[in-house]
Every structure is written in structure tokens, then in C-alpha cells.
Length: 279
Image (cartoon, rainbow, N blue to C red; front, side, top):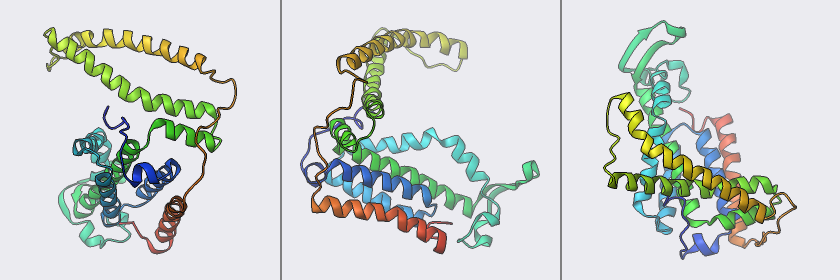
């Protein structure tokens, strides 16, 4: 996680040619479109395009492991939703008979759900959900890897976004990788002292976690004090911040912004009138 949020100076059009506003609009557009579509056939091109851009940006392949991490974090709601997608009326585009064909199902009267389990339709829905999550995470990795926080902040200031909102974004952007490095440092230090938290006993697990919790709480308190001092030094809340970068856009930026603004509009139009992206 630390590496994903760390900007690397690079060469290529994703670094030098494109304005940060263009990359911000592109990422938000993909997030919106990926949230609208359910069909894996529509989502897969967006995912592949994200990987292609990542290859141009030379994003290290190991960073994409965060995709797996993000998917595993949502395993419970994903599983719960998957087994509930067994009724044929849930599918608007796929053949209802095929979609409701059972792989491993049970009949239940709980909350009127009728049938729970795995069907061809629910597995297809699961594939779409996984690809949707992967698409958003991959595009987010490319965006964060090719855009520094100073570029993001100055672009937001130029857009006249309120200073407190920009400050919260900056703190969040910096806090996550910094805390990740702090946790790694504490873990390494405690392991050198023979610390091992592996156990299935909950009481022992709690006791063994204390060597990790105590220094982490102390470091967190220090960080809070440092952030407070930093905000005072920077005159937070004293007035509007002058952006260090204007919104002058090249023809390529203007074209790409128009394309990515048009993309969710077309996606909504196709979804409403032609059921594009539905299953």
C-alpha cells in the first residue's frame, strides 16, 4: 500500500503531457461508468485499458496485488450478494432460464428469497463485480502513481475547491502510506525481539497484540501533534491558498476531458434505453 501511494517521477505522456485535471476527470469517469455497468463484457475493456495505461506508466506489477487485497476485503458482502442472485427475474438481458440454472442451490422461505446459492447467472454477476472492483483499483493505482499530491492539490485550488476539503485530501493521501510505513517499522522491531502474534486463542491474541498496540498509539499521538503544528505554521483557515499551477489545457487535454465527460453520459443513455451494461 505504501508504494501505491508513492509518486514516482517518470517520463511519458501520462507524466508530462497530461494535465492533472485530465487524469482526475478520467479516473472519476471510470469510477462512475464501472458503478453503472454489471456486465463483464462491458467492464473488461475498461480493465484492459487500465492495464495498458499502467504499462505505459511503468507501474510495477507487484502493485496490482492491491487489486486482490481490495477484493478480499469485501468477500462477505460479495458472497452474500452472490448467493442471493438466483431468481430469474433479477436478470434483464441474460436468458432467464440459463441464468437461473442451478450449480449449487437450496430452497428457502427466509424473507421470501425462494432460492439461494450459485447459478450460472450469479456466477456471471460475481465475475462482473470482481472485474468492476479491479477496474476501479487499477485506474486508481495508475492515477496515484503518475500524479503527485502537490499537482492534485494545486489543481483543486485552481478549481476553487474550499481549502479545508483540499487539506483533508492531502492529509489522507499522506497519512495512509506514512502509517503503513510506521506499522512495518514497529512490526520489524518487535519481530527482532521475538514477537509472534500467531495463535487461535483469542486471549493470547489480545495479549500478544499489546506490543504492537502500545507503540502504535504513542506514534499516532505524536503524528496528531505534528499535524496540528503543521496546520498552524501553514496558516490553515486564514484565507484562500494561491494555486501554483493554472488550468491551462492543451488540445489533447481538452479532447480527453471531453471524451471522459461524454463516456458516463453515453453509458447512462445506453443503460436506460438499450440496457447496455445490464445482465
